[in-house]
Amino acid sequence: MALSEQYLDDEIHPIDIVESLAAHHDWDFDRIADDQIAMAVEGQWRTYSVTLAWSGYDETLRMVCSFEMEPPEDKLPALYEALNAVNDQCWAGAFTYWPEQKLMVYRYGLVLAGGQSVSAEQINTLISAAVMSAERYYPAFQLVVWGDRAPHEALQVAIAEAYGRA
Image (cartoon, rainbow, N blue to C red):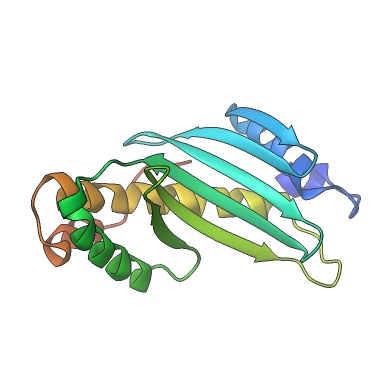
């Protein structure tokens, strides 16, 4: 049975669908509020924190996939250069570094304006794409920050698709 067949009623809240997906994939999750859920998704390189939140105001399902990163201050310019190059390669979503929280973050907002509904497949793809992007670029970020590699050189590692699944 397809994941979407479990949801025949268009009025199901997007976060309810996310909660069902998290249970289906056996991800650790915490329903923070009616409109927000946080999960831990295991990748090849590390465990990623994935948070999805529904905003009824602008009808957007927002997703943040993050992992801790504590680059030395002198490496920040190279990291920001690498982020720009990576974001040129990302068509859906974008990476940013939050220095106060020491987090590398991949963000995406799925706009469902006009009362559109979201399917379980869309949400599953959204989460999988975020984790795959984090997996793909994680080694490059590490090479820039800790391996003293130039951003263009480190990104050569990310040219090949990452293997694995979310």
